[in-house]
Amino acid sequence: MALFACMYYAALRPAEAIALRREDCDLPATGWGRFLIDVSRPEVNRQWTDTGDTHEERGLKHRGRDDVRPVLIPPTLVKTLRQHIDEFGLGPDGRLLQSERGGVASTAYTEVWQEARKLALTPSQVASPLAKRPYDLRHATVSLWLNAGVAAPEVAERAGHSVDVLLRVYAKCIDGQQENANRRMPTP
Image (cartoon, helix red, strand yellow):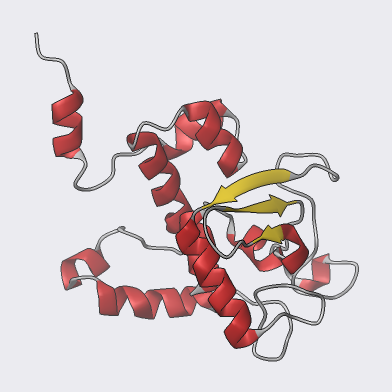
């Protein structure tokens, strides 16, 4: 749940969420918190890594190796992560999200996601592209922020994109937002 919450409430990429360490998080007892994102751990074929691990530690996508991206996180996510830490603890290296054996969480979360879709959505929604992949949580959040009127430069910064990429890739319509758009549209 914490992984999916990070992807939805903070628009993190899965590899960024998997790499989160306690030291990267400000999780106050109340109010907004903050992540300082500086590492990504994408899953790769172990034959392509120097260590033989399936998750290679890398810098942030499209940024310098030492760059850090601050991301404000809403109280709901702060609470979820505090509960997650209380229930599951931290990995040996301080990471929030770990496998059952204390290692790096794998892409097995995709299988969990597919099962959750079947439980949460109608059969026609399951057959549609709606929330097809866990990564779609990130797309939904960024699109939701844009549709809510948050300035594109602010959304781009939080998501770790340029404004150009943000508007080209993420500026989507959110199901059910048509009435809001109709109210905002000036009529001649």
